[in-house]
Image (tube, rainbow, N blue to C red; front, top):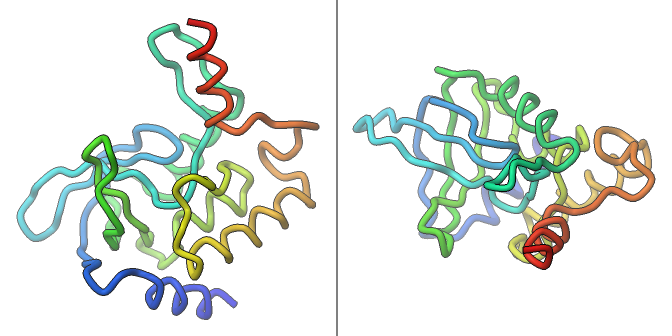
Length: 169
């Protein structure tokens, strides 16, 4: 199954997508990492394609439940200095590279985050069917097994949590 998902992932990326090697510098939160390109040493902030993890503390100082767990889980997947393969998907409205990342042990990072219940499939951004459908299946399985954030009766997706914070301002 894993090899099939990896094959589908490769086929799903646009023909213009490029894959490149990098080294993890730091994990920002549960869906964002900073890496250094192996080729030229350039540092790039990457948003993980297709997922949305619980929000870390913003200016008001409040974090969403499970945000720290998601960050720590991602740090364990991508420890500082680890080698990764980055497959560009797009540049988002914040000028960040949005990509699929494979860890040094060839795990698709997005799949691992969803499987562990540390993130949601982000419906607004997850449009590539070949990538997003398997992620949705993993999310459904995590939900059924009540792992991670799915242990809560009604976990609040980050996009709803952000909207409630904006309304409160």
